[in-house]
Length: 84
Image 1 (cartoon, rainbow, N blue to C red):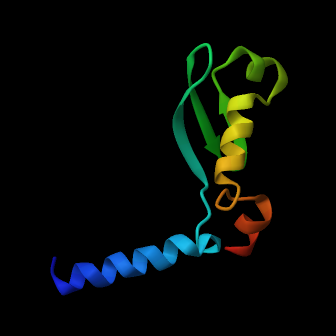
Image 2 (image 1 turned 180 degrees about the vertical axis):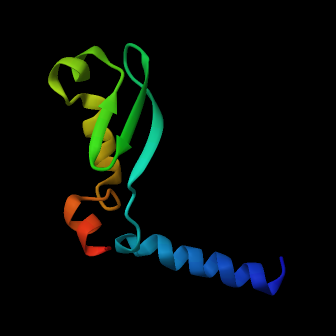
């Protein structure tokens, strides 16, 4: 491994520890649920899921699980305003 890549790996490790540097504004994920596989999306602070529960309630176990997993990097309205 050359020295330039070693520096990048070290920098990436430091960045990964500083989650406040990252604000995720949108993404799509495949969630392998207990009964089916669903596409879950996050865009501009809004969640979406293909499951029936989400379509009737606007929230579901799939979106709540991803919120917990990604809580440190999901963009909130406040973070979006601060970056402008």
